[in-house]
Image (cartoon, rainbow, N blue to C red; front, side, top):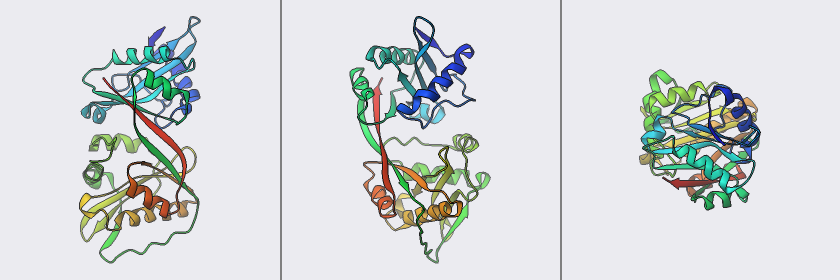
Length: 286
């Protein structure tokens, strides 16, 4: 039986998601303050005894809707049967409109991949998670370059413009605005100097974002440089600035990169990162 997530089963839904979600992807699992609403349409699959055996929830916040895409926070069934996933999918589809595509990330070589393909999903891309141990790093800053700590009141629009322009051609990018950024920062664990702008003379041309994640690692990214300044070493400057922060904090660092972004991947490997695990993105056109 499929049931829309309401207050009566919300706690069980969150507990189920937390328990089984990491089997696929734990990037955006529902937290304790999660609300199932039009921005997060959610359903549960119950067995005859009323026990939860499946869950699905989409992220449909404003910048996802503008892109006409939805990302699954969780899409899982303990039955590992295609029919269970099809039921969850159909229930979610019945709750949304004006969306062209839904997608999710899963771990490679898992049964879920064949199930997704059976119900109509197709493989879109691979993403690598890279980790770096606490190694020393040097940073020589050119005379025309300096870094500025991010201030949300002063730099919000600048942040969004740099991100949107830098990643316009990267698969999976969704444009952001200042309202999205405000909400994002509220739920992020950003250390002091964890977001910095790279300024060339008087022009902001790049930035890096970092936060301390639940595993006690400094998660770096996005790291962005305006298109006209890419390929000139500024990405390396930003990365090394972030790595200096990881040394100051005494935390190993982690970041993610799309497999097709070969230049960024090469840079990260050169700077001491190693592949830790891989995620596979599946999408479904509605």
